[in-house]
Length: 115
Length: 110
Image (cartoon, each protein chain N blue to C red):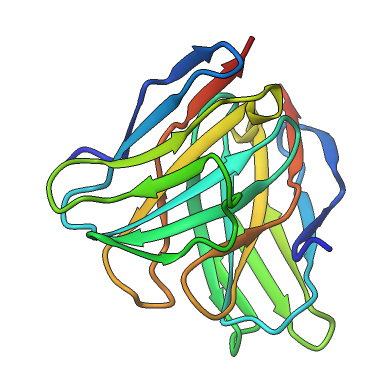
């Protein structure tokens, strides 16, 4: 009964490269959320997806960032042309339904470092 | 402005003592949740309290919610060294996204 799986756990990129972060939700969960956490701070919502649909991307920068959750396979958070300010921990969470009282289950995150 | 703000930012206590953390928020909510984060790990859900509830218990955890003051508290009784972690409150408004506070870093000394 695996939890939310994120990979890689650590990712190092040079400025200008692309970063791809993957998230496999818990079995049976069709809702995925991405959050970003800077050191010593709380998590900031980025995007909420269901299978093949972006439901809410209000927290995601308009440029360079994109997310998808295809019918098959993991959810992907993609950052193009990375800059130093993108260095952070990126967490994925999943929930089984749209119920407002469904707690979100988190992965252990991907720590992105930009050189 | 940040929805959830925890207080204190850091707390250091001896094993066996109680730890109280507070959270304030600004807008109306559907529910408020508390999460725990160990260093280098993801968040673990601890407890959810609905907007029409005032108090909830789970093991050594006690959560209160005062919607008139837009505040919540998390009490950990008889703390253990293993309780050392960061604790975050998160509010749920319309939609499924969570809005997190900045967290309280709790250290429990053995």
